[in-house]
Length: 284
Length: 288
Image 1 (cartoon, one colour):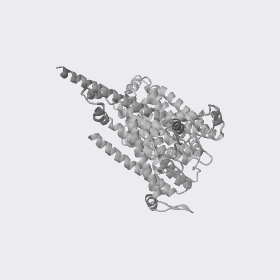
Image 2 (cartoon, rainbow over the protein chains, first blue to last red):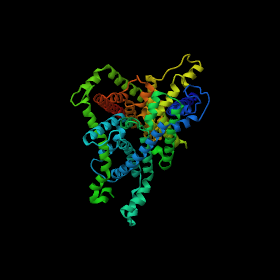
Image 3 (cartoon, rainbow over the protein chains, first blue to last red):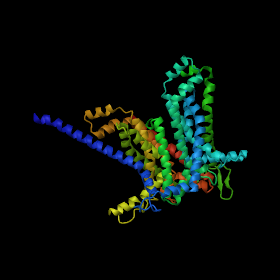
């Protein structure tokens, strides 16, 4: 009798032990993956506080002077200003184009809707190197045929960056439009509001979080773009990611680490700000 | 009530005026330029005259007959496969934990995974350079612990590039898988356990098949990104290291545009082809 009763209990114990082991392995690997993702950011931040100018471990002490060094380096300031200008202008143009497109995609049923939405996402799918090269070639052809100075111009660069912002803005506004309750709009119209008032008073506030999130994602993807910009910047002009790349090809030191940390801080701030409007876990 | 009926007769006009400008700009900025690039890839290169109008497959033939370019090609494919597999192995547990956690820090943890995506690959490469350099943290710590007696040089090698690309691509895999795992009903797992399945069996028979759409999407995404990696191989692989994306830019800078265009299309075509193969394989796995 007793053996019969013991057997299931033993089996249960093995099972619980196995589940516990399984969950330890699972959580262990998850932790490793999480730390792995953050490792490079931790080390570049650490380097930015080193006292000595070479990246040899252990540091001889800690200092903040590389930040003032980075903030007074004219090349980095110029690159930062250009990247910020590009990001703002490209996002503004991107919003003007993408907001109506998102409205059209969600609110109007038409043939070829899937095709259009795929076309609008293309800049995210075509590799940056290929897209940058193709766009450069196209700008060369335009300049040859029209005589307009397009190659290496600021607006040529803006054109490329607008392309980068559109997929993000469309995606995030579409997501918020799809999650919106249409009954509110119908109620407003029933109460006598015309279409414009309904749009202004009901639709805009409802999708505002999506607009803000889309704009920030668009800005950040323009601000951090490297591959496409490599082809489109003219002589004597560099964006921040390009100047970081070029510096790192030459050497690594706490100054470039400080520049990197400034970029990280901007991205973190943008993300935490966005998160107040739209939960990031829901939109990425 | 149907949306389109509200918009009555203006539907066609309003649809095209809403969607038209963005679509035209993207088409003019992506599709037309790609067609020009394709045309360039059939042109001839002359060291003196640079690009000469022609219609020849010579650049493609050159690419596939030159051991230098072929080497870069196989290195790129090999690294992409290794990195993608590593991303599945590391990404699945993290995605699962993020999807299932009840922690109030869940959103913060997800933000921590998202942030590196936007920080830029060059910045992250700088982090790896600090860690992996010959006088970096890893090398010195290994010597201090007596594990190695000489400096460990990982920088400027395929290993460094693989380490770097995995870190770049892992967040994409995690986020893709996490969104799919969120929708997998937890009760199914509990049901498998209560029927006596050990964890691995539960994973193989329940969780893995149900998360297949996410695994397929994540695999394709990380594979495309690995194939087209630029900053990571340039900075962590060093000047001698060859992958296809840096090769495109290198040939472009050397003014051989036709060859650079051909390499760009080989890169796109290979990525597309292997993506299709990967999605067929995973769909097959899904059916079984």
